[in-house]
Length: 105
Image (cartoon, rainbow, N blue to C red; front, side):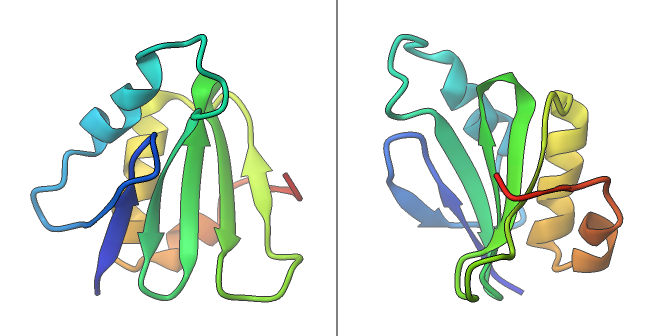
């Protein structure tokens, strides 16, 4: 399975076994006044994506599907975000689906 990383300013790169998810998340700590660029994400080849904004807001959606797949959680702690990103990178969508998602954004 393959996945990609989307950095805070929009650049993307393929993910690999050595991808540093913590470094990706820490990009949100720089320049807190820049609210326009406030999200980083991991996207699986299936189109499922977990995007994270400051404060632990995380959205789970399929970027290739019709509208209505978006779900979210608020105030997710860093270790949990990293675990969810690892699940997504491994294609373990079943583990992600079990989370207490709220509908929409």
